Length: 91
Image (cartoon, rainbow, N blue to C red):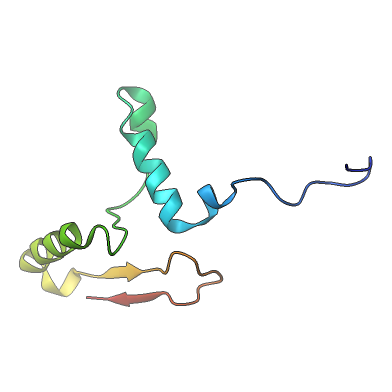
């Protein structure tokens, strides 16, 4: 129980928004809702969660590399890390 001057500093299931892999999955689910609601969630660039989306990533990587190899940059972010740890750019 909280006293009157206390505030909540933890929300249940916050990882559904704060972990990158869960955020991608949840936004993709909402984007599949038909109509204007689904269109409102079209806010992410092309995103893949590895290793599950590995084949799709390789296909998109190869397609973009053929079109413009010097501009084929991707950002790799570990799902469970914070404060920028483990993030790198590759092409």
